[in-house]
Image (cartoon, rainbow, N blue to C red; front, side, top):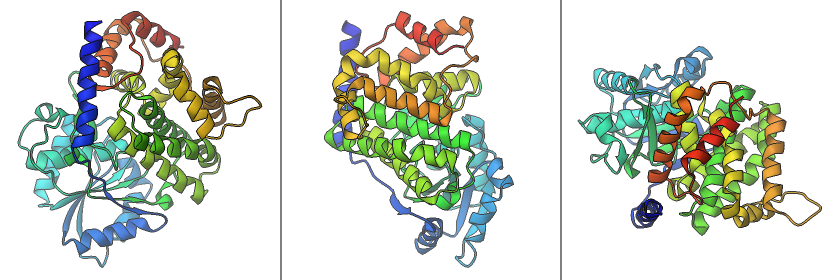
Length: 396
């Protein structure tokens, strides 16, 4: 079809851009105690007034207080903006911008999961770009360098600490608005497993599946390269091995650290290779029904892989081989899918939901296909009827 050729040409252009344009990486501090190293580095760089962007949940459990304690003696004045909610909206970004200006901050420190980090990225962009969020959305529209941004992830899934993307929602339409620009990559990040110890099992599982989805979609992307596929394989191997441990034994420091690295590797993979239909489903289900992003990815991952199987069988067979899946027979694509299903069963991932309303399916189909076809180098195109069938499949 002519439309498919147009989509392929567009996503091919994105692949060329990913190779030509320099994609920065944050200076990374990792391991126990790395938060202290990051805070010392911020002080060494001469910053004195920070806006800490986080959420009330982390304030209540004392995590924000622990980070603030570590700033003592470093000459840092930290103002806390803790109004970030799951799937942050334009309003939260604008409130954060006002807090940044009122506190005369010089830089931003994000503490939290993908919502806090994405919100902080867009606040940083708005500090120096005096245009609306809608005008900043899309590709390469953050024209001026954002405020300096440092991040401390408290979940292992989004990879936001290394990606060029940030997603916030329009509060009126409930549509997710992606901003994609290399300028959104943070300056520095700390992957500290000590902060992940208290993460509930359910959140650990869902965010782990988010990381798995990033890695798998990047691997089967038509824009994948040997470099991005190497990062994907590294991430998938770590997830298969350590996610069940992190869910079952939340205090396992090694499992927490390995999952943090898996999320980071997956982020490196998809920031160049891009994503696919699974994320188009997840973004729109999350925006429409408030489903957590990792959970929504979990709903769509297996159905989308099975739909795409005729075009990705070789890739999934290779993943089965490279991730050392134990099987009596020669590894196959089906073995890889079975491994994902086994992981789901081990950590309690939901495969269907009652949230999807029959009356919404036609509208959701339009939104999912529009997002996927104009943004993601999918291996196999899906039409409206096929998309609707998958939505019905994941409806309870």
